[in-house]
Image 1 (tube, rainbow, N blue to C red):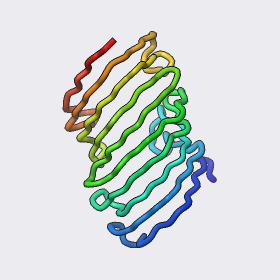
Image 2 (cartoon, rainbow, N blue to C red):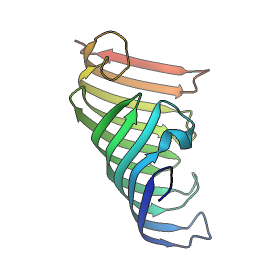
Image 3 (spheres, rainbow, N blue to C red):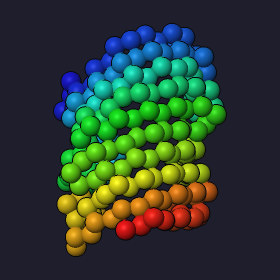
Image 4 (cartoon, rainbow, N blue to C red):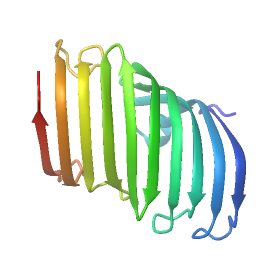
Length: 171
């Protein structure tokens, strides 16, 4: 327990001294972790959730792990999203994730693949059943959108965004 939130870890780690061959099987519980403060992102506030992480390797090159869990709540732009199931795999320096959200202001699902550098490449397929942008503080005016997005970006660095996004079946 800290002033930055609470994290509970239960499980096992072996070969921890060797970053390439460390193996782990962990249950994690996060309660009101101030993730935005830790990541220096003022738009991202607290997160709570339960996760199971199992795999080996602790470096981007050696990591082969699976994460299954649910974000109980996450606050972004002063809006709290609830109950977001997440399945993710990290292997070959890539993260592949599947997540969905059913909220009064957004109902969507996404499959995302991204390089571990944080700057891309990024491939995403989003199915947006509905999104109300004003309550989510995405737009100042009321916009309700429905549609699909397929995106492929070789770089997602804010100063040199490169790629394409196809938006279709929009309403």
